[in-house]
Length: 50
Image (cartoon, rainbow, N blue to C red):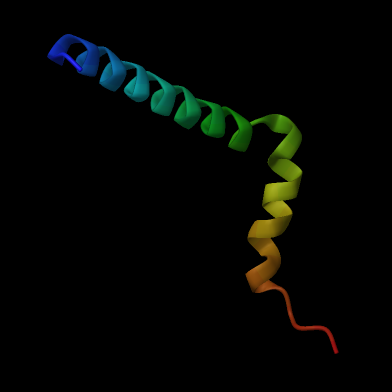
């Protein structure tokens, strides 16, 4: 492989990683999931049930 080809592949890999990161952020902060994540955040604070 030439250096130019390797540079293009590295750029594409970086772009795909950035898109994946942004996708996870959008998924995590979407309004549809807020109640589910809020409930999960309270789990450590709840008392154990017998």
